[in-house]
Structures are given as C-alpha cells and as structure tokens.
Image 1 (cartoon, rainbow, N blue to C red):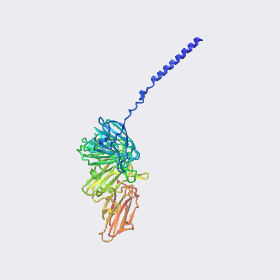
Image 2: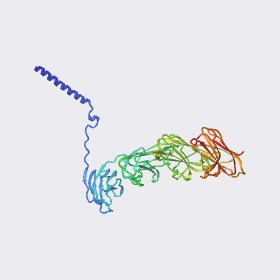
Image 3: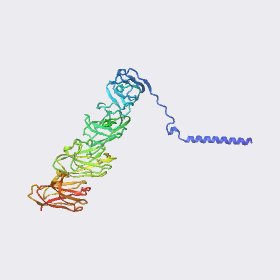
Image 4: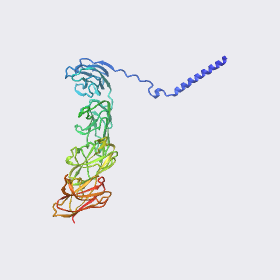
Length: 571
C-alpha cells in the first residue's frame, strides 16, 4: 500500500510540473505588453511650480517675476472707483527664448482682459475674448529676454481670487508665434511650407511674408487655410506696399477656405499673407463680432503650379481686376468658393455681336452675365444679359449679344438655389475647370441684337430686309422695330418668319396704340405651323411705328443651333 501511495504522489508531482511548464510555454509565446505598447503607465509629469503673487504689483516696475512655467495664486483687488479697474502686473523672464501660454481663471462678476507688452514696455496686443465671469487666455507669445502681462478687471469690479497658469516651451518649427500682428513682424514662410497657428483673440492678425520670385507669367499659387471651430477665417493677400490684392473669407463659422489660382504680376518678389477672423453675427441683433479659438490651430499652406496662358487668375472678383480675353479665345476658370466671381473683359473696336459658350462643370450650376460697362461697379441690375438656362452639369450658351466699341465685361459665377426655404449659393469645384469660349463678329445689320425683349430695345428692320435671329435661352422674345412713319398712306405689308427645327414659332405684329397697362396692342398674330413650318401675317398698315415679336411656343423651349429668317415686304 505504501508503494501505491508513493507511485500516486510521483504521478501527481509530474502532472503539476508539466502544467507549470505548459503555462510558462504559453506565457513565452504570448506578446509582451512592451511589444504591444507601453508596458507601464508613464510617470506623471512633474507638478508645476506654484507661486504667490507679490503685492503691490499695480505698476510695471512692481511686476511679479516669473522665470519658468508655474501656477500663480493671485487676487484681483476691488476696483478703486466706479470707473476704475484693478490690475496686476507680471514680468516673464525665461532663461532662453520661449513660447509662453497664459491662462487666467474666471473671477465671478469680472470681465478679465489681458494686455501684453514687450521688453521695452511697448504694447503688443490686448486679449478680451471671453465674457464676464469666464476664464481668459492666450496660447503662443514668443519671448526673447522678457515681456510684461497686465491682468485687469472690470470697471468698478469687486475683485476676487484667481489662478494664473503659465507654461513655457521651446519654439517649434512650423508653428506660428506672436507677436506677428504687423507687416514688420511677419513670420517668414516658404512656398510648399505648412505652418500652424492660432487665432487666439478676436482681433488677432497673423502676418506671413512669402517670397514669390519663382513665379512666372503663367504660374499660379494655391493657398489652403483649414477650418477652426467657432471661427470664420479671412485671408488677405497684400503686396510689399501692403496694398490689398485679394481678400476672401470662409462661408461660415467652422469652415476653411481655398484660393485655387492666385496670379501675380511678373517680377513680384514677395507678398504678405494675412490670416484673421471675419465679422459674424453676434448674440445681439444687428451686432457684428469677431470670434477666436485659443485651443485649436489652423493650418496654412501654399504651393505653386503651372497654369498656362488660358487659365484665369485670382484676384478677378471685380471689374477692375477682370481677366483679358480676345475673340476666338478659350479660357479656363475655377469656381473655388461659393462666393467666387470671375470677371473677364474684351476690347471691341466696332459694333459687334458676341457669342459665348460656357462649358458644363461637374456638381456646379453656372451663371453667365454680360455686364453693362456703365454699371460694372453696381451690386445689382448691372447686366445687359443674364444666361442661366442650364442646370447642374449643364452648359450655358449666349448668342447675338450686341456690344458697343470699347471695353466690355463678362461675369461667371455659381447660381442660386433654394435650400430649406432659403436662397443659397454654395457651388464649388476645386478640382476641375470650366471653359469659356468666345466668338465676336462685326454687326452688319443682318442679325437680331440681344437684348431685344422690350420695345425700347427692339432691333430695327425695314421693308425689304431679311434678318436672322435665334430663340435662346428658354423664354427668349425677339422684338423688332418696323418704322413706317415716312410712308405715304396705307400699304399692304407682309411679314414672314421661317420655322426652326424642333421648335414651334409664334409671330405677332403690334401696333402703335397701347392698352391700359401701357403695352402695345396686338394687330395680328400667327402660330399655325409646327417645327420648321413658316409663319406669316399680312395687314394693311397706316404710317407709324410697329413692333414685330418672335418667340418659341411653348416658351419653355429654345434652339441654340438654328436661326430663323424674318422678312418684311410690301407687294
């Protein structure tokens, strides 16, 4: 029996050893925590040094000294008067050049503002982004030897305790730091470089100096500015004399912006890029404000690319910046923002007729204007003609627009659409270009002249004339003036109009008399034919001025390819 017990004990011990060996083998085959990631929680960061504010410190020469990152326990005294403010001064003096971040905790009832001075006690900027009773701060002030901070309470404020948290870090490449709020302190930027920065206060302006000597006549620049929560950014481009070349803003809070094809005059050595916050509607009615975000950085990047002679260049959002085009030219353009407007100008030596084709652009509904040169600076009612016949991904076509000698203008932009009961314009395509093709021919008096919708715009026609006309866009109405004032007595008059393929035509003759609404009365009309069938009216006419109208039937149809012939005879 003892022998059996000993054998059982040996078997049991062997099984335990095997189990231990198996567990060790399993453990050795399982990846360690170090292989998967940190095996241990990293040690906590050292606690920031704590200081007490030294009083009195209401003057710069009494400022509390701060030489490194710390938390300062301080108290804002009660204001010495109803219109006066309590204040505390601090002096930063890091051992080496540093970027400091400052945060002042909330003081109940106090609207704290911060003012920074340089080592010579010259004011750099003031921060007052938060409302009363909330914390105030700023994220990225660069300090060489020293700088001053003033913490100030509200006029007549009761004061209270606060904490001033200061962090100091070494400057990092690619990070914008303050103060760069003027051209003289602009941050150097290279093409292709990406820089990150803060709009840390509502009136913050970040200036960058960008060399452009590598740009040629056909080079264009792309500028990308990323979104920042709660901020609507604005980008300005200025020359070395600080003259504004371009200004554009994001469409709304929390959106970024892109300038797709900036062009510069050949020989431009450098430009300034200025990033700042745009005006937006505030909490109070009819009150505009600027916003800031001292916690989230924006990203600004630039790049150069070859555009070619046929690519429009920004800025061309105004008539005075219009991109010059000539007869027979085809030009390309970007719609790089919802509010982007591209202006073009064409010089005309003699009375001419203009035809334009604006190609389709993916995801975009384009609109084309011919602008009255005398109204080019007006904000509305500036057009001679507006063409908005197509929809998204569809082309626009203009025919027979009469141009006077001199400088004439075209304007391309995105159309308006209704979304949730509101009219908006939000078409953008940063990747593809539209194409604008122009044709100009001398006005020899043998074609209708657009616009001629109204009697006062009517194209003249005489007995014996045959004029060509086009019914486009949809709803087009062509009006002709037949002046028989010099005629001796009544004469039989025949008016004929040839048909147009796939489009029924309506022909009408209007007399000199007007109805109660001031419109010329219809003498006779014809709308009998179909498609390319001829329309004709005949009537004995007395001396006077008459109007002939031609339009499609129904008016929702048009034809850009074929022309009708309108003839007036007196057998």
